[in-house]
Length: 228
Image 1 (cartoon, one colour):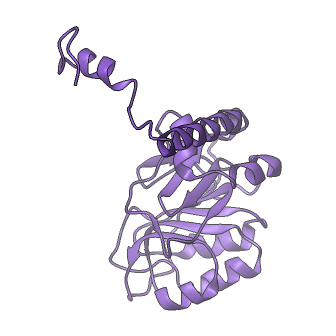
Image 2 (cartoon, helix red, strand yellow; image 1 turned 180 degrees about the vertical axis):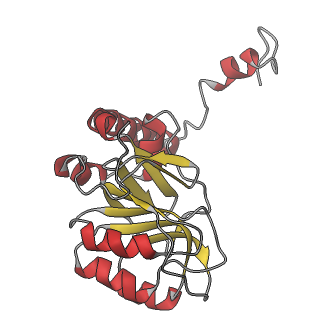
């Protein structure tokens, strides 16, 4: 039985047109139309709430506290890629800091998402580059434990395949399967339009949730014929 190499260099990425369109949507909108799945745990959050990212996932799996494979991934990733790093949620040591993230920005990567700790928070804020992490720790990493690049990973509790669409903003990160991403955008357009119409209705004084009585009856909270 053949075995995949630890480093896979060639991957099929979600299309640039899909990424450009997806970047106009909130992560929450995409999560809703994707069936309320594919979102990372809230521990993976932007360094600053204004940070936004969209692009194909370039996946990296590391052992906790070791960033050897992240250095290799930076050397292999293409402009527009989002490094998505499965750091096992470890917060005992930082996997990246200003030096590595500066290189990512210089190479034209779209951003970095780390399910693990990073450091140099204030300098990263000045860097003006989208970075999401599970926390911060001043301790540095080791650089000698092997890992894998462009294999399926679990980051923030969700599955990420190489080339999947990744979108992140102040609410967190959502991952959409590459093959399903184009279809999700049409649904996202409708969702945005529906929500805009609802906001207009609320502004006119229509604050009632018309679906609520039926939902309460189905849940057994209200009896048939009973209302709030």
